[in-house]
Length: 403
Image (tube, rainbow, N blue to C red):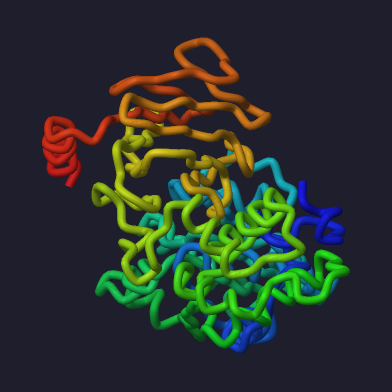
């Protein structure tokens, strides 16, 4: 849209994780160094935590892109798994067909594979993203993996990345054995106000910006005030500001463009926001910005997983956690669908995904849904509920029964 006007080769503030755009602040550089160290000190875990949008996934992408050829990698992004499903997923990442194997065969296959790699001078890294959603039994299985090739040099490194709740889980009394095996922990914080200008300049440079001063330095204070230094929020605000400047035929982004973008997004100052990851219920989910008028209940094979608050306007549903409604699943595309919410219901629209959206037995491109109506993607079902006192009371009773 605005690339030609601002002499850009590509969009500089896309939300999709791209290691080329990684801005190595001091803390991002330190977190990457911790991750790199686990490849060489294969006797424990490295845990990296950070708020939603802090850049964990981009950091992981950069880390994996720069590993030596003698490192074999398994990356687990779907974390809503049973212990058997977790072991099968890891083996599938290594090229096996493990889905008919029982647990004993899975463990034996992994052990033989790791021994073969050790004999060949290879190392193994397992990276688990969104690890805060792992079942306690899966975390115990991960701890047990550290004991493979017993009596020999260790071959396996494990990196757990997730939201701050992961640290709380590891500090629980029943997780003491896993916590003791954790070599390093690092919490990725938002950028400092002094880093905002460097972050924006870095992304513009990677995008091939041929224009000096595209963002006026006077905008940095407002950008920090409304994003809190969270990289994904910076990207959203800066991209919207570029669109506003383009529409107004301005040569660049000034404070007026930023304020117009803030008005378009409907954002309060960052300090006034509710914590982004706060759910409506006790289930792990993300709260969108602004006043919620409804929510999606996510279930899988009849089992409740999470509640996702919806405000008026558009929310994006997809596999990666740069989405407003992130659901890690092989059935769900990176950016699968958009959900447009108002006080009467929602409009769900497919974004040219692989597996599409179904309402009942029909695959639909777009569908209007009211209170209590559902759509499905693969084995996941999403039920829309309006935010009413009656629904809130019913869901409170449900949460009590599940607890």
